[in-house]
Length: 279
Image (cartoon, rainbow, N blue to C red; front, side):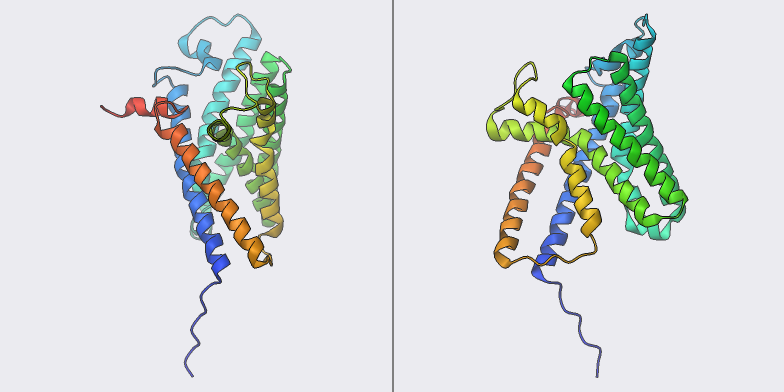
C-alpha cells in the first residue's frame, strides 16, 4: 500500500500559527521603525534630539559628575536599545540557529551584552538624577530584570543548558518589547478611552498603571509560553472562539496603534521618520 497522506492540521492549530505569524510581522515592522526612530533622534538627524543627553550631544558644559553619568548612561541606553530592537530576528530564527551556529552564537553574545549595557545605562541615568519618583522606580525594576535575563541567558548558554538559556532569552526579549509597547499601549489607550486616567502632570491612574503594564504582562506571557510551549491545551469550542475573537480584536488594535504611532505626522515616531520622506 502507498504511504498514507498526511492529515491537515486542525483548524485551531492553523489559526494559532496564523496569529503567531501576524503578530511576528507586525512586531517586526514596528520594531524596525522604533529602532530607526531611536537612531534618528539619538544622533540628531531629525529636528529634535532626546533632551536627556542633549548637553553631551550639543557640547554644552557639564559641571558635575552626575551630569556626565546621566548623559553617557542614557546615550548608552539608546544605542544598546537600538541593537536590541533590531537584532532579535537573527537571534530567534530557527533556520539560522540550526544552519549557522556561529552567526547565532555571536549574535547572542552581542545581544546579551547589549541587554546588560542598556540596563546599566538606564540605571546610571536614574541614579544620577535620583528623583526617586514612581517612574524611576518602575524603570529601575524593568532595567534590573533585563540585566538579570541577559546575564542568565549567557551563563546558561556557556554551561550548555540550552533549555534554560532559551527561557532566559525569551524573558530578555519580553523586557526589550516593553520599551516599544510603552508607546503603543499609551496610544491605544488614548484612542480607545480618550485618555481617561491620564493627566498633563502624568499623575493619573493610567499614568501610574502604564509604568508596569508596559513590561509585567510581557513577562507573564513569556512565562506562560516557556512553561506550556510543548503542551497541547484542550479548550472547548465555545472557549476557542471566544479566545480567537479576543485575539482578533487585540490584533486590530495593535496594528492600528502601530500605524498611528509610526506612520502619521502626529505619531511619536512618525513625526521624525516622515521628515526623511520627500514631498
